[in-house]
Amino acid sequence: MEDPRIRKLARFLIRGAVELKAGEKILIELHGSETGLMKALVQEAYAVGGKPFIHIFDYAVEGALVQGADAEHMEEIAAYELQRMKDMDAYIDIRATTNISMWHNVSDEAQRRYRQYYWGPIHLSERCNHTKWSVLRYPNDAMAQLAGVSTEEYEDFYFKACLVDYEKMGRAMEHLEALMDKTDRVRIVSPGTDISFSIKGIPSYGMHGNRNIPDGEIYT
Image (tube, rainbow, N blue to C red; front, top):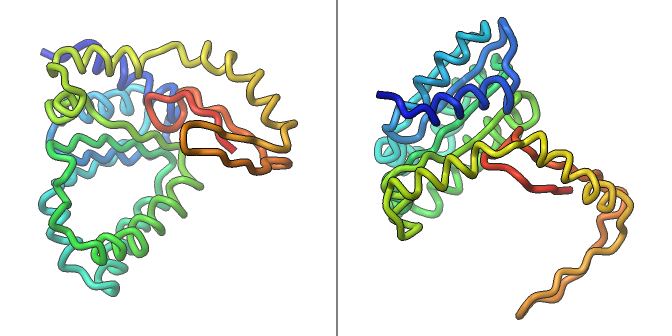
């Protein structure tokens, strides 16, 4: 039986976070094996008249691919997926690793090639700038273990955090956004830290349910 919170989150992601419209294409990717939310996202995409596309990554298999690929092959792999991303109007990524150290045996050099020739062109250049996107993690056993709580406790925490009133959050952000827009110098002080810099003339953006989920940051 589907957890009703999964359906509520999927509906929010499709209708709120990426605001999928009828006829728009959305790529839904899953890094991991827990497909419940992905299935709900596909159904919700259809419900608003969208056209869902899916891609499921296995971390171990993807790690083997990255480790063995030289720069030329990494570019070739990226070229196919980049063309698909260019054809998309929206994108959602669910990350559900069962082990945060899954790529520990992938060399630093291989991961550098991955970031330069794959992640950079597809995600930083294309997806972030040309699609309506949202990225989130999934509350599995691994995340609960890292938090030092049971999976059930972590699921309760996760859904409460992800399903807040984002419209109310957006309204609460307005005053700080306005202050940041007229601010020149910023100083950050904490134990061992004392730095200052200027944000004059740099626009500020309040993220309230429209990028990384759960949301709540205001950034320049």
